[in-house]
Length: 215
Image 1 (cartoon, rainbow, N blue to C red):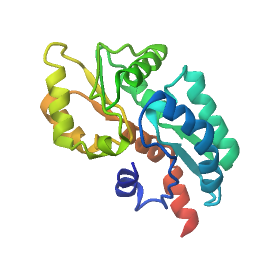
Image 2 (cartoon, one colour):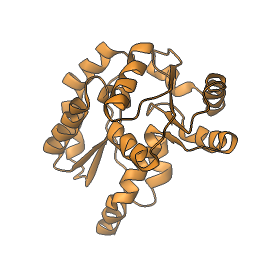
Image 3 (cartoon, rainbow, N blue to C red):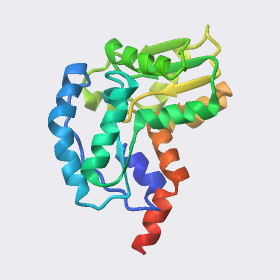
């Protein structure tokens, strides 16, 4: 997520990051991350006087209902004194613009977390016709999946469903780099967790405003 944000927003704003500890991408580890490490991360990021804070974990936002994700944003906003956006909410806003009828979802996650993403999409009114995960647990292994491997994984899963939109879920997946190839080959919109968050920040004008105030 950090390289994606620096590449796309680094010339428009100062991008400050604070990591939340997550070695294994499982439900139990993400609950622990939210309860123990996220509050400390919010306290640290507050010291940068941010204009907007992005919560960069799609699957942790999807552990419960959409109210769970909204509560994460509200707690970050209170603790940081800034506008807060979750990646999951950014994705849902992009889907509202696209209004897909046959959404396909792909993740690097284990089945439990992939299913959690599907449940939240269903709650928002975007019912996937296909959802598949790579079954990876170690966060470092997720980050090591290449864009070529993401493209191959998606194409191996969609031959029989003819989707009209693809969502690549996970901030630690190199999904942004796979988007141009998939869009060119499939001819449909392809969104990712990081790209959706970057687009929301850019469209909101927060990045440009922040840069202008610091000049």
